[in-house]
Length: 451
Image 1 (tube, helix red, strand yellow):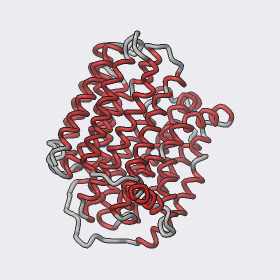
Image 2: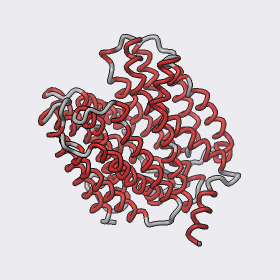
Image 3: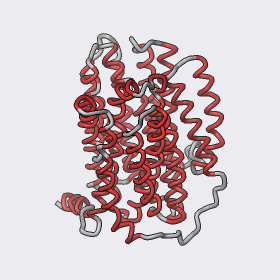
């Protein structure tokens, strides 16, 4: 009974009178970011046709990603100097402006400007919301807060692509952008009382001097964008571009990540590295699950996307369960890695012609559960290990590591597809990719054990 009562108390702590509006605003803003992210693929074919931008098809994703990197880093620095209020005042406003610009765009270039503003605003908001959780919620309630953020992705995962498709079909693709604008404004209004209460909070201890951070952020944005483009256009030239981009990224990451992150130094560095390994392995395999189901097993696009919905549900359920039970974060991260590794290895069962296609549903639900166990625990542990003056920098490092790892490992999949298989029958590439990612997940479990 005590465990049940503790779980209930933690859940209700999010909805205490002095936190209710903050919790609603956090969940609403993340939900809107998720809707926008998950809906773009649905509206993009119609969008580029109307704006005559077929040659720019991948750029709305690339521009958003590059701008997100810059927004993430600058938000982290601002949070460490003045607290989360300035980024949370500016980030939603940028995101809102981006929605309006994209929704009213008459050319592809204007639409890309809107996507740039959305990426900046989204990157700024994510980091500032993490820091705000550290300011508003005591440490014992942060797991529940991050569980609520995970739950915010469920409705967009279930309804986002379908809703965007219906809006595009019966109204206009523009409604997928403009329809979110009033809800963003509502989230901004809900945040106002909390922002007034927090105010500007210069850190008691000054944050470490990090010269060249904006330049490093720009270098990382360019490097990640080039790798993303190379992954979307696999060829020998693209491979050379990706290698050159990694050279560009190396000095940038030295400034954007805590020392020792890439060598898995125990403590904070390996925790941030764990975020990258989790996100990278999950996204790298997820990117090719629908392709396998459509090209190998003949699934329709709608059915091929069903495992991704199961993954979102598994993620949310596990994150909410984790938020209601007090457990050691490193142990949870390790368990999440192991659960994820089993699911990733299991996906080889759907790759061949004779494979069990419908096993994709429970397997990807299991993969989502592994992520739901580990990802909130990574965020909670990062905040616990971060001095107040470095919460912004370390939260930004989580996002940068996440984006870089996902981009790089999806690119690995693209290289394997180009070298070993084809998009019409990718089995020869998908099997080694799945096993490789499962091995990386096991490595993550080993590394996180080195506290």
